[in-house]
Image (cartoon, rainbow, N blue to C red; front, side, top):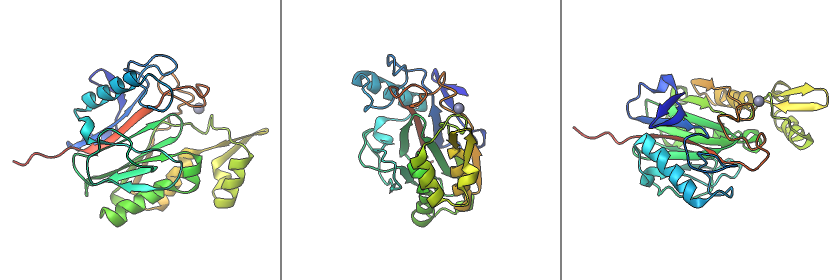
Length: 263
Ligand SMILES: [Zn+2]
């Protein structure tokens, strides 16, 4: 973990040699929201004071030296819709999708999380990036692989050039699932389901990290890094929908390329 402008963030060693790449996973710290959203809540849809949320957005943009007008977000739907972003946003939520991809310099992709799996995608050859939101429904439908496919088919990326990072999210230690999820998985992933479910007496736990890692590798992605940080275990650092009992904030993830000034 490092600090940007006083905000704690996670960044990846392997990506820091790309001088124009902007990437950050923020935590729950460094903002102005009050409990139960304390402090860096970025969601406008969880009941937090709107002016606090706007101040939190301003803080992360300042920390990354980007402007609100560069930021593109979306309504998260637990589906597999992937949106190719070709122009700047306004910091708002223009469309419904669970994956955003772009090869447009200056565009900053952003999503908010509290247990669902953030997947950051980066192709340094094509200078393309992607951001995916994968809960169990999205994972079941291989939303991460869908984003890789759009990057290869529409942005000209080679899958082997893409590195993926599986960010902080609820881990196999804490993600107890019920019969509905187990049945859906067993039907959709007959071979994989056994590997992804851990049984402890009557309780069954799902490994979303492993599931997404397998899907990304099967999609041809060259390298998948699992942070293996569980949001429910690390409520001291991240918001966790389950760990915090439902009323909580959302932490932010941002990825994009800066415009390179012409000489
Ligand atoms: Zn855990």
